[in-house]
Image 1 (cartoon, helix red, strand yellow):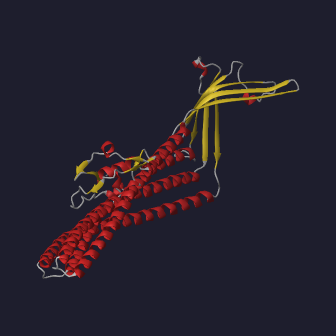
Image 2 (spheres, helix red, strand yellow; image 1 turned 90 degrees about the vertical axis):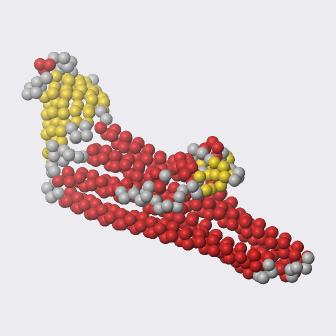
Image 3 (cartoon, one colour; image 1 turned 180 degrees about the vertical axis):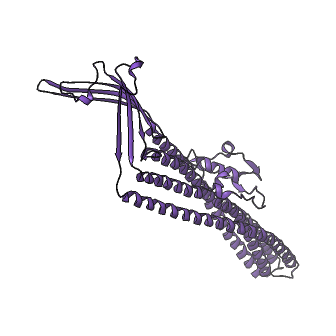
Length: 454
C-alpha cells in the first residue's frame, strides 16, 4: 500500500493545520485512476477496436490459387490464378489479376494463351444486396457498437462518481459530527472538574459530582463512536483512491474533507435528455435493430448478380482490351417463391423496434421523474437548512441561559444536560441536512446523466 501525498497529486490547501482534500480534486482522481474508470475506458476502446476490425471486410484481398493433377504420366491440368479483389461499401467489387492454365485434359473454359491471361473487371449486386448486405450490415453494427461503448463508458462513470460522491459527503458529515462531540466532551470535562471542586468545597451536593461524571463518561462514549464512524468513512473514501488503477492509496492522517461549493441551486440543463447515456444506449439499440430490419427487407428482392471481366493476353497492348470481343461475363438469378422467411423475420424485427421504442419512452419518463424528485429534494432541504440553522441558534441560546442559571445556583445539572443534548441533536440534524443537500446535487446530476462532466 502506498500513502497518498496530496502535495503531488492535488492542489491542496491548509486549514487549521490540516491538509484539505477538496471534493473536486477527489472526484478528479476517481475519474482518472479508479479501476472502474479505467475499465470504462477499456469498454470504449473495445468498441473502437471492434469497429476497426469490421472495416476489414472492405480491405483489398490478394488472391493466389494453384491446382494441379498428374496421374499415370499424364499432366491433366495446372491451374494458376493470381489477383486482387477490392470490395467497396457500395456493394460493388473490383477485381483484376492474371491466370495461366495448361494441361492435356484442360477444361476448354479454363484455356489461356501460353503467355497467360490478364483480367480486370467488376462484380455488382443489382437485386438482394444492392443497398445493403451482410458485410455492410456488420460494419454498421460495429459502428453502432462503438458508439454504444462510448455511452456505456459515460454511464459507468456516471454511476461511479455518484457512489464516490455519496461516500465523500458521508465522510464530511462524520467530520462535522466528530467536531460536535469533541466540543461536547471538552465542555463536559470542564463542568465535571468544576462541579467536583465545588462539591469538595461544600457548595454542591455529592450527587451533582456523580451526575457530572456520568455526563462526562457519556460524552466520551459518544466521541469514541463518532471517531470510529469518521475513521471507517475515511477508510471507505480510500477505496475510491487509486494510482494508475492498480495501486490503492492511503490518505494522509491529517487529510480532511471540506465543502467549497455554495448552497445555491444548480443550473439545470434543459437538454439533458438529448445527451443522457441511458437514452443514448436505447437509441443505438433501435438503430442496430433497424439495420437488421433493413437487411431482412433485402430478402424480398431476387438475387441478381452480374460479373464482367475484360481479358487480355498482355497488360501493355491496349488494343486487346476490347469490351465487346475479349471479355468474360456472367449473371446469377434466384428468388424464393413464397417469401415466408423474409415476411416472418421482417415482422419480428418490426415488433422488436416497437418494443425498444416503448422502452425508450418509459426510460425517458423515468429519467424525468428522477430528475424532478431530486430537484424537489434539493429545494426542500435548502429551505429546511435555514430553519434548522435557526433551531441550532435557539438551542444554543437556551443552553447558554441554562448554564448561567446553573452557575447562579438557580438550575440543576439535569436541566443543563437536557438543554445540551437538544443542542447536540440540533447540530447533528443540521449536519445531516447539509449532507443531504450535497447528495441531492449529486443525484440531480446523476439523474441527468452528466456526473462524468464534473
